[in-house]
Image 1 (cartoon, rainbow, N blue to C red):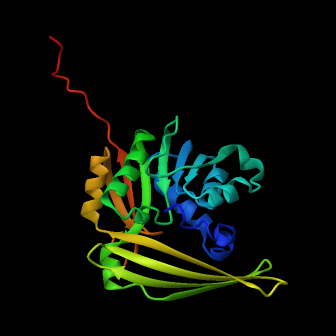
Image 2 (image 1 turned 90 degrees about the vertical axis):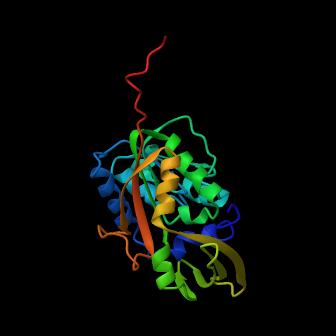
Image 3 (image 1 turned 45 degrees about the horizontal axis):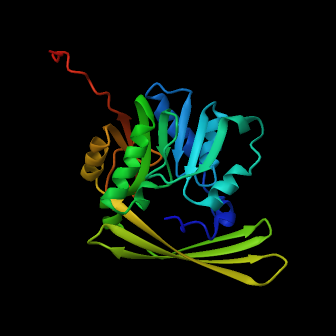
Length: 265
C-alpha cells in the first residue's frame, strides 16, 4: 500500500475539497462522547494529510497521526495549524506494524483504511496495532466497505473534476471486482494540468479495496483483544443494511479479568 497515494499526495486535498471533514470529525467525536471520552488522546491510523486530526485537535484532543505514505505525512506535517499545532503530531508508519511508546484513549481509522487491508493477516495486524495502543477500555472506531451493500450496488466508473487553486484535475476511477476474494481493484487515471502551463501530468494508481461482512470483522476484533460494541451506516445512527456502502464499527479494548480463584501454591 506504500505506493498508493504517493503519486498524487500533493493534489489530494484539492481532490477532496468537497469532503466535509469537519462534519465527519464531529460525528466521530460524538460517538466517543457516547462512551465517556470527551477529551484526551487519539491515535489516527492512516491519517492522510491530517484534516480529520486537525478538526479533532480543535475540539481539545491530542492527536497522533500515522500514515504509510511519506508524501502524505509531509503534507500533514507542513501545514500551519496555528494554536493547535502543539496538539498534533504526524509520523511515518504502517498501520500493521507501527509501535509507539504510548497508549491512547481512542484509536480511529477513517476513510476506509481498513478496506485497504486485503488479506486476513493484514487486517489482524492492523487490529492488533489498534488494540495494543489503547488504554484499558479505550475505544476503537473504524469505517470500511460493507459487503452486502457493495454486492447489491456494484461499483461503477466514476469521474471527478476539480478546478481551482491554479490546477485542473480530472480523475477517472474504473473498478474491477474480484468477487471470489471480496476485493475491488479501483484503477485511477488522474490527469493534472497546472496553470498557466498547458502540459498535462498523468498519474496512474491501483487501489485494491476489500469489502467486509460483519461476522469476519467481529472475529478479527475478538482475536485482537477487543470487544464489539456497535455498528452504523457512516455518518448515521442507522444500523448497517444493504444500502450501507460505508459502514462503521465501534469496539473497545477488552479488560482481561484475573481469576480470583487462582492462587500460588
